[in-house]
Structure formats: structure tokens, C-alpha cells
Amino acid sequence: MKSRHAFPWRWLIVATAAAVLPRMLTPDWPQQLGNALLIALVIAVFTAFWWLLRRIYSNHEEKIDGWAYEHRLRHPVMSLVVVLIVGATVGAVFAAGLWYAAVARPKPKEANLASSPKIDDAPTILVRYTQGSLPIEIPPNSSVLVLQLSPHITSHILEIPNTTSVPIWWPREPPKPDAEPQLGPLFVCELQNHGDKALLDVVLQFPLIFRAARRTPGSAKKNPDGKVSISVTMDTTRKDDPMAFAFVDAKRRLITGTNGAVVARHSHTVAVPVIAAKGSVSVFLVSQTKFFTAFMLPTSAQVVIDGNPTRRLAALIRPALNPTDKINRWAIQPSVYVWEGVEDSILDLDSFVAQKHVE
Image 1 (cartoon, rainbow, N blue to C red):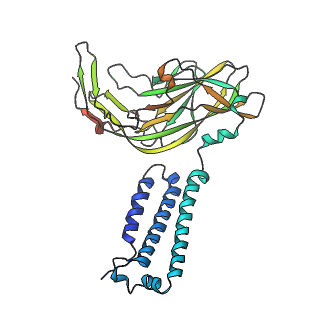
Image 2 (tube, rainbow, N blue to C red):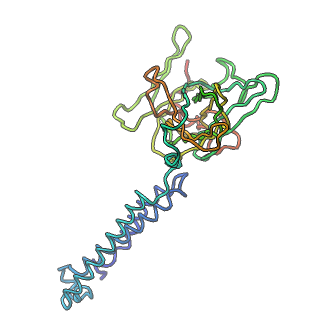
Image 3 (tube, helix red, strand yellow):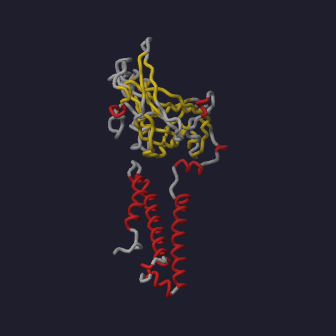
């Protein structure tokens, strides 16, 4: 008969899989690999320690003939030393894990800003955030900067030029009112330089969190004035910054959804080539993913002042003109536009139908 104190391989495999697999099934699994291996090692060491203690100190009659129990009877001091050594090893592994998580693990690039000159010594940039909608109008002989919000795009910024003598639209012409679906919302980050010198290579960090979308109940009806009233059911007990979307699509269906579990996160580096003296530059934050995107607003940036190659730390000054300007974390709904060349760039509308027809 199999010993009840045999090494618990099955428990070890199940516990390791339960702890490791959720981290390996996310788009950012390469970044989670180190944590997963550390967790697997800690579970294995603790399991071995627990099993050894049971082998040595079990009073079950089945263990009278077991090697560990017999060794304890013959060599009690040595058995105690073995337990202490194994316990010290377990403690060392656990302490190494804590040290790695707190000290040795690579930090997001945002932390590197601390090595730049002190903020008291640095220039200031006035920053304003506003909400808008696609498409973006690009004036003649100019360009716009777009931060692509996607778990599959983790760095750089997209510059879209207009080399013509007339304005153009990106990504396409504006949809016809009441005939075509809207292209989706966006956020605008306007950076203003009120100094006498241009600011070069302005680098900002936007920490991004992506959450899955899930369907939520909703209803819509057409009012006598021709407008549509929409209501969405939300769980008011949630404490994880609930977000939701609701709109009527081109097929006159009500599409609703709310945010679910975190699927990915990263810190996205944005490099603005130049902000002219007494000038401004806008960065457009555009969702190009089927997930909700939450982003933290940076409070500083690395800059080079024209004429001085020393990189400095600039403070981003955000005037609080209204309650919205005091919010440091904003969110944007999933994309409803197909972005060519971007993986998972659009929400599957058929999976989020709350009402099949809006009268």
C-alpha cells in the first residue's frame, strides 16, 4: 500500500500550476517569467521542508520502520541539525525572493528619472489633458504625434505627417452623422513651453494597465425628440475603478460592456522631438486594442534645453481649473475601429450586444 507520507508530487504540481499558469497566460508573460520561476522554487522548497518534517517527526505507526523516523530515534541531535539546516535554507530562499522583489528586480524606466538633476533645478512644462474623438485633423505641412494604446505596442510614438497644402484626416474622413458609426474617443495631452528656449527630446513615461471587457446589461429607447436614451447596469460595490461603455452601432444594436480582469501592463515611453520656445505640442492618446486602457498621468519629463546638451528633469505643471484636472488616472474604452497591422485592435461587437434593435 502506498505510504500516506510519500513525497506529495501531485500536490506540488497542482500548487505550482495554480500559482504560475495565471502569470504565463498574459500578453506580458516574458516579463512575468522571472516571478513565475521564483514562485515555483519557493513552493518546491517549502513542500520538501514540510515533507521532511513529517518524515522525521511523524508519530504514525506506519513510520516506525521509515528511514527518517528511525534516524530520529538513533540520532536525535543530528536530526535536529538537519531540520535547522533545511529551515535556514527555506528562510534564505524566501528572503532572497523578497530581496529580489524589493531591490534587485528591474524597475520601470520612470524610476530612472530620479537620477536626473533635481526638479528644483529644472524647467517647467504646462500640461493640459482634454477628451476628444476620432478622426484627427492634421493641418497642412505639419504632423501629429499619436500614442498607440495597445498591449502589443510597448514603446515609441507614431508621427503622422501631412506634406500637402490642405488639411487631412487621420485615420479616415469623419463619419457621416446618423449614417456611420463613430470612430471612438481619444485623449489629448497638450505640452506648452513658455520658456525662451526650445525643449528638445522631451521624454515622458505613461504607465498603462489593460483590462478585459465583459458584457453588462443595458437598455436604450428613442425619445420623442429623436434622441436615444441609454442606461447601463453597473456593480456599485466594485472597488477596482469600474469603467463602462454604451453606444448604438451601425446595425442599430445597443453595445454595452464593463471592465474585467487585468490582462497586461507596461510603461510606455513617449519621446517628443521638440517643443518650440513659446510653443506647444499635442500628443493624442488613441486606443488600438479590444481592452480597456487605464493610464497614469506623468508628473515629470526628461528634456534637453536648446544650447545645453545636459539632460534635465522638467516638472509637468497641470493647473486644476476644474475637478477633472485633479484626477491623475484616466481610462479609455476599447477600440471600435480596425487598425491595420495592430493585433487585437477592435472590440468584437457581436459579443457585447445588450439590445438587438433600438427603435
